[in-house]
Amino acid sequence: MDNQEEKPNQLDTKERAYATGKRKNSIARVWLKRGNGNIKINGKSLDKYFSRPVLQMIVNQPLNVVQSEDGYEIMATVRGGGLSGQAGAIRHGISKALSLYDISNRPALKKVGFLTRDPRVVERKKSGLAKARRSYQFSKR
Image (cartoon, one colour):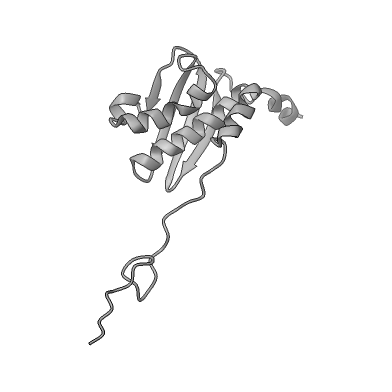
């Protein structure tokens, strides 16, 4: 009975939407609520955590799609992987949280592919090869 009442607006007691985003080996936990546009990642501001503008742009992409850059306050914790994977995981988490917060955001985010988990991960190293696909140099003599 509680599940049916909870389903329509997936918000907690503090009016926050929660979602988990993943990319490569990174996992991001994202809480999203109405606010002034602050984005905190692991307790740091967005520009302190991601110093490269490209990574900041990746994190902001879902907000640009729904045209509400300053409409939501976002708190995220992310672990694992490198900075690029972490930025992608946060983007995935923000997108999922936006669609849970307001179902009308879902079609726009789905169209640009932000709700789909990117399945690409590092290929494992094979025995007898230098790397995953790179073989050792062939010597004829």
